[in-house]
Length: 347
Ligand code: 5GP
Image (tube, rainbow, N blue to C red):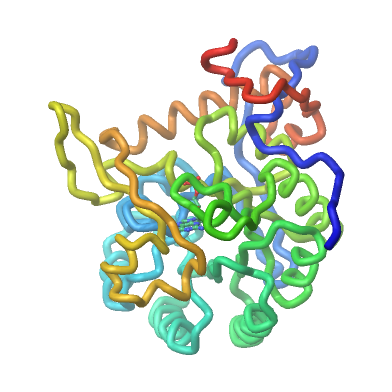
């Protein structure tokens, strides 16, 4: 046994210190980024915020709503190839195909389905290989296999939380590594297994490892407000993935229920018993540890939430003088805050 004594921090443990700035308005801030990916050699331009590949979040309707604003969606993995055909056939703009990833597990049956979807729809460029525990040798082998089979696709893979494993996944064929174990709003990994890593430190360490190899990272999980998204980018995330923050909207397609006159929608982890029952055990491989089921207030169309989120992010950029999102990391100084500091109630 060993104890690592270095301090590791989560979003709630820090704030971003304001800096002298020449920017006078949020409208002077650009949130677009362009990335070139290490294996596929392709480039992508957009606002690097993505919907998580979860039920009621990573849906076709979410994809069109987010793509119209320049954002991205990792699709939930349960859509059959025929539904992809119908969706793509109905898209008003083919460029939106650059704003969606086909998600897959790593069983042979998962990869066979991925192959079918990509054969029928060769214009899809992004693959999201998603497992709860990205540390397994088998996962690494499957990434290498998918890379060999699809040399020109952009592969995002995870989840991991440490630099050496980010390097391993990038060297095995991933272009982008998904970072986060345990921070998710409906995730119970930390409670059930004791395993995890504070998300802000995971981003800082993993971004450093990835950027050294010309790779990118996605900060996945734990953002509860626009401020957390700003902190994730400030820490070095190239992309930020959101589940709970995008739940409860029309585009998720969940049933709108009512309690005490207030509309709400169910939201659940992809390895919660709700998801397991829905997919009759088929999800057990997807998220090794359990997730939970919660209710979230119904919030109408997602575009309003997105405007609010992007407004917060632009404002964060003006506070530190970052005219482009790209500059946010180098202009960020975090200050540690006292334990249990709550920016809403404690000021
Ligand atoms: P959120 O933005 O809601 O905090 O986190 C979303 C992320 O939580 C997802 O992208 C995924 O990585 C993770 N997640 C989703 N469902 C589950 C689950 O059932 N168990 C665990 N451990 N993580 C989950």
